[in-house]
Image 1 (cartoon, rainbow, N blue to C red):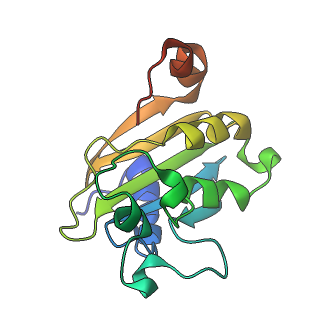
Image 2 (image 1 turned 120 degrees about the vertical axis):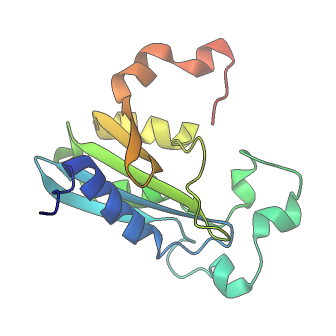
Amino acid sequence: MNERRDKINYYLDIAEAVAGRATCLRKKYGTVIVNKDQIISTGYAGAPRGRVNCCDLGYCTKKKYLPETRHSGYDYCRAVHSEQNAMISASRDEMLNGCLYLVGYRTDSHIYEKGASPCLLCRKMIINAGINKVYVRIDKNNYKEIIVDEWVKRDELLNGQFEY
């Protein structure tokens, strides 16, 4: 008898499928927003609508103009983050008290992105969207759960901490 997949990994599996549409040459990220056991929206990382994607250009603009920069320099990146794309596709009423499921993996190896977590801008947007929890895939069967209210209480920017 097959074991039924737990609900969190089920939604993370869907986020991983969504990540397959991401247009970044280095990393694929996908997001699913769920509320009351209903998928509200999905999003993947990619250039804004109508702009050329890095996968179509054949190079990463951020790597081209800021080759030594990691975890910053987002103004040079063409992609809108998967979390952002999912949130702009839903209303706040739909997201209020919901959960966000995030999966990121490397394009060259399909290894899950170690330490994946929403960036500071996405965290601010998640807080304002009224989302309660974020689940981030660690490996095919494991994930970390983030209580969004902890981001509000901790407010790392007031302490000069610029976590990724």
